[in-house]
Image 1 (tube, rainbow, N blue to C red):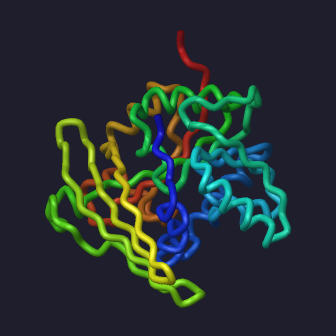
Image 2 (image 1 turned 180 degrees about the vertical axis):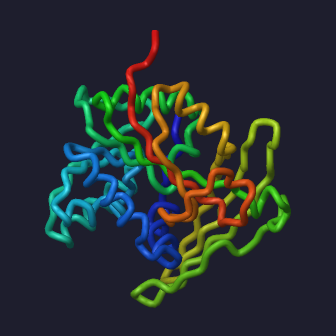
Length: 260
């Protein structure tokens, strides 16, 4: 089962992302779609932060989202943008409407929220037409693994001022399960206002080592075409562990027929 964003976690998700994101992943996704013409599906499309700009570019992309709260936020955003995107409600590991897509987009570390990456990737394989493309971004939680963020201690994760002047804060603490490659996080969200709001949530992130992910993609029926670091298509490093980077890896892969 995937993990939905609820309440303030959904409401503040985009504000925290947009405070740090320069929109580079939208451009990368657009370039990928141009090289894989035809209907596309963004998995974990949320409130449309990445998907809606693609729709506004005239691209044939639909969304899939588990969280009802995120879907409602997306509907409100779409009305303000005067667009009518097609977004499905469902779990990324289970949903299937029978359509075959020419490409799947799994940005923003979505795969790492699933409890079984292999089963999820095999399910995605079934959503793609043969030789369809998979765009996938994952990250390594180096700050946690290297102890830059100590375990079981609350720290300020994000703080942002909303357009209406309210202050939003996210505090996080975590613990590691190194054997199972899991970061188990607790989040405290707060939002000033009258009345102020708070929300507490838990989230489990699974990290996947680079060589492990390469093997997993092949085992699940994909050919890995290329990968690069930190949203920079020019950073084509054969061994990511040999260089300093922010821990973000983007993969382009092609669906092949699974061997029986």
